[in-house]
Image (cartoon, rainbow, N blue to C red; front, top):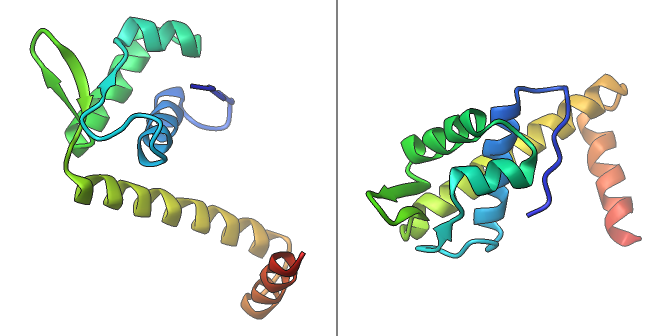
Length: 120
């Protein structure tokens, strides 16, 4: 997994989003095992406690679950995965619309730009 950590948001929140993207895009299939906290932390270059916090939040959301001695696994519930994908998409759309509003674009101008971009 390719990790991108920036200074514009809490690290654990960025980890949550990146792990979620990996799951909803099929990087880890439903029921698939997630690497250990230490493995993921080393790969991402973050403190294991920060990675643990991110995984605990994903577990709270139901996207992953723990099996006592076997590790963490992605849920097999397709509805949970689909909802996570939709929530993530809505978050990206809100960021995009906010950035476009900051540039001074109105709704119709945004739609027009999207149409032009789709044609290219």
